[in-house]
Length: 186
Image (cartoon, rainbow, N blue to C red; front, side, top):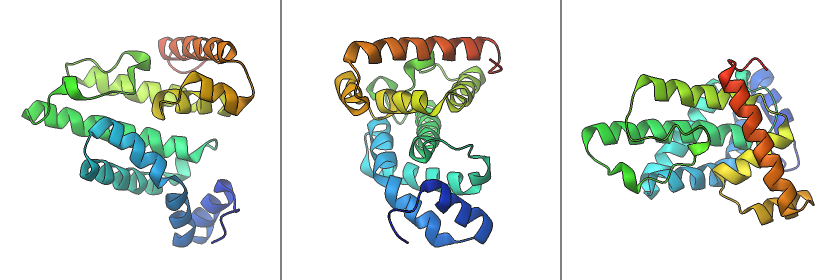
């Protein structure tokens, strides 16, 4: 499988032709990105590898629900969701001190220390709201919150000033807040 084939074409090959090599190519492209995001949350290489594997399995099963945009960001969001659920399970069992976990989902202030069904729903709502953003906005969210890139690096990648990126992030967060408050319909 050639490396210059687009993600969209690879996904079409998986869905229409049931081509497993196409999905292998997607995994090769994004496994390091997903693994690094999982490692930031899990703080353990084996756990991060497991989360990465589970994220790609879930992405494969839900591939027909992908609505375009950055495939790597989509799989990373899935991995973050899986990692947070695993951490919550461990916390309830007393295996991990939650204070030691660095959460990248504080965007909607859902990483509080008490687990409940409302928190799970908030995470799903946030993921749905992020998925509805324009691709450029999703990419900024991905770089800033999931890949922890400094604003200066994001600005350089986009050919903009750091202050411009700060303003864009503020506006994106405000739109997300409104989407969440109004049920993702805005």
